[in-house]
Length: 190
Image 1 (cartoon, rainbow, N blue to C red):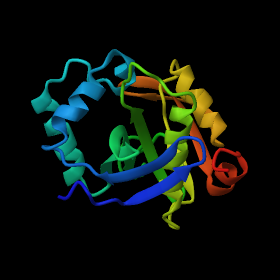
Image 2 (cartoon, rainbow, N blue to C red; image 1 turned 45 degrees about the vertical axis):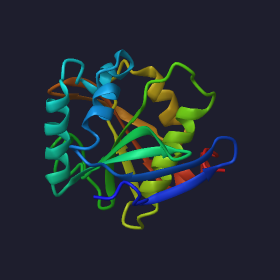
Image 3 (tube, rainbow, N blue to C red; image 1 turned 60 degrees about the vertical axis):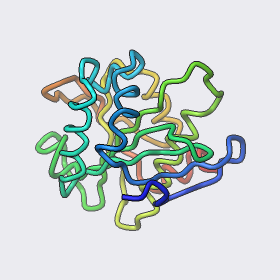
């Protein structure tokens, strides 16, 4: 798999070029390990994973027909992780009323010692534009932990509306939806 293969890109008016490339479970395992085990990634629930466990997890994702992981780039450098999945087949099976065109999403920004104002909003905006670039995707579904208030605020900023709380095996989650129109009128993608 070529790391130069760009699947999607956009230019943020303030922060520059964001892009997304395929994730290589083996080649990217060490990079991902530093991200998913960082204290700021507690909601990723991989704090105790070693590099081999991270590679194994992302190999399972890459081999799954309804789950995909991608590396996000900022100005050409790895900066975030994206997962998209079919919520009718994993994560949310039986926990909500699925609609045709639903796509599930997770994202994680790489840890940094020099945070950039607006960066995480630019990342979620990039992820949403990536998802809605596929005309088959009509609604994005997320299920963040109920105590992850930072991501709730970001979700609201790009148009998500909370449907309610659901109980998953690993957490209490805040089921939220964002249609293409909600995203387009949120102002986040201006």
